[in-house]
Length: 141
Image 1 (cartoon, one colour):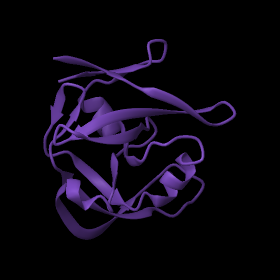
Image 2 (cartoon, one colour):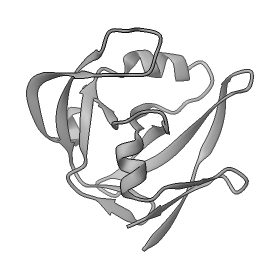
Image 3 (cartoon, one colour):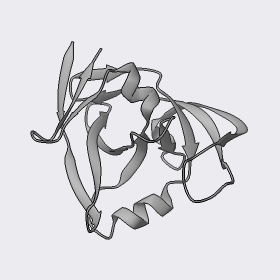
């Protein structure tokens, strides 16, 4: 099944674009993700405990391609079922970390509260195609 989901393209700084993808928990609560093609693993805000099905309390190192040589300390978890358009995703594995710093950055230009970053693990699994012209993300299950 192929699902087409509208994306919002926001400009954080001049010529610095980020893709925002909506999702829903429980079919009603909107949650917004940043599509991060450079991230190897999807990340979710550990403060949004209502949407976390289970959490592994052990700390893991998440190596991020950023300015710091130090890996980020995260734990891992599994999310409650959520919808990306018509695509239902069960037992999504994510790294859990505090996303407050991300939301502070985005609040400068948008009202979206970011719940997580969709990384290549998710994008590859669902054969994601970004259609910039039509402002949508195509996912195949």
